[in-house]
Every structure is written in structure tokens, then in C-alpha cells.
Image (cartoon, rainbow, N blue to C red; front, top):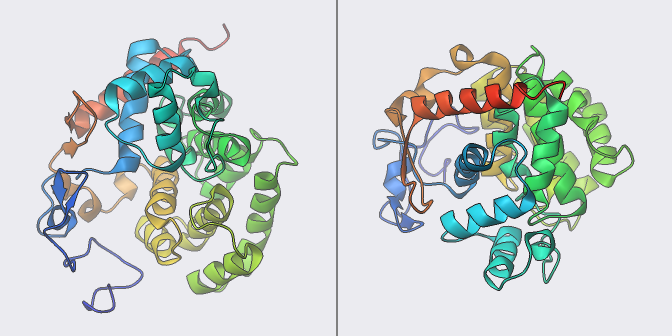
Length: 317
């Protein structure tokens, strides 16, 4: 689409056109609401909904929430879900215990869904990767197992570490200390980190992933995690390049680019993110969470700060 409309590729800003601008996403936001010149808030997004839901879980149940607490929040707030999350939600509705909801009739246990839910645990435990990973585990266990579970722990720990580092690659390395050393995700992340310095550009990065993981589903945790590593490496600390390169590499690129942006954002802070990425939001976020359709962005920041203070108050206990 970008090439057809003459827009920059890799993207350097929000796109200005869409083939079906009047299509509606999740029954709420029109596609035109996501386009430059029309953005009036953060429009509805399924991945972002889990970041906000994580905050609500922390506020209701505290940092020692259980997987059962997560299930209660899902039943109350989620009108819909996809893949592994959909299976878990339906199992919960059928009366299955939260500890078992992710394990029955669920072929998506190692897909990317859990690691795109990793952000709130990092935001609530900045500089404490071990704690972020523990919270991510309890959240992810509702719907995922194996490398799907490890993906959530890895990115939660890495983003948490990024808040106190000036190097996103170092944050990734710290994140790896929170997952089993010989799980497949850890092995492939070591490959990605060793291959990254040899890559010429994003095209070479995408080709390397395609070659290494033939036949792997495009929304699997592992291949997408490697693309996130490559995007962070190729971006060299530049927010726009990091997000743009990660989008350009494809696969589940709304998730991979969001994770890369989240981690790098923790490193560079608000001053390191060009204003054209966030000023159009006008301090508002829209969601499909039942009973929580609108948030003020500054309020979200303050609430995550409060959650982080509560988490850090438990240090040493």
C-alpha cells in the first residue's frame, strides 16, 4: 500500500491514505482515524487493550495478582479476543479454572499473544526485570505455554531493564537471563544477537529470518522476537528508524514494531521520541474494554508511576 500511494517505505510517519477508509475496526474506530491528518486520539487497538488491562489488574489486585485474578479481569472487561486469548477466554466462560484455561484445545500456545501483553509488567517494575518477568509469567499462563510463555517473560524483563540503561541491546541481553537458557526462544535469540551485526539492512534481516524459520507461522513468538531484535539493532537508537525498519520486515509487524518502540522508548524517554508520533493523540486513548472506553494519556502515565511505586515498595520483603 505504501508504494502505491507514494508514501515512504520503511514508514517515517503515519500513512495518509488507506484503500478502505470507512472500514470500522472492532466496531469503533474507522480506518481513517488511524491516518495522518485524521488522528484525534490513540484509536482502538487489540494489543494496546492488554497494556491497559494490565494496569487495571494491578490497580485492583496489586502486584501479587494471580492468574485467577487475570481471568476475572478478562471475563469482566474483554468483549473479544484472538487466537490463544480467544481460546482461554472461551474456556473461562465455560467455567474452566484460570490455571487450565490456556491448556485445552489451544494450538496457539506459542504464538505472539502473550509477549505483546508484556508492557504493563515492565512499566510497573522499571529497573526490576526479575519482578517484571514474574508478573508477566502469571499473566501469560492464562493463555500460553512453552516459548509463548517465555516470550512474555523475556520482553517484560527487557523493557524493564531498558528504563535504567542507555543501550537497547544490553536490555535484550538482560531479558534473556529471565528465561530458561536452553529453551528454543533463548537459543534463537542468541542467534539473532550474533547475526545482527552482520546484517546490511532490513531486507537482509527479513531474509535471514525467513531462511532460518521456514514454515513457521507468521505470528509465532520466536520468528517475530528475532525481527524485534533486528529492528532494535538496525535502528541504532533512532526511534523512527527502529519502528520503520521493524514494520518493513513484516510478519506480525504491528506487534514487533510496538515492542521495539516500547523498549527503545524506555531507553530514550519522551524527549527521544519525535513529536509527530504522539502529539496527534491529543492526550486520549480509545479502547473496547468494557467500562473503560476512554483514557487520558497523562493519567495513564501517573497511574503506572503509582503502580511502580507500589511494586518497588515490596523490594526486600
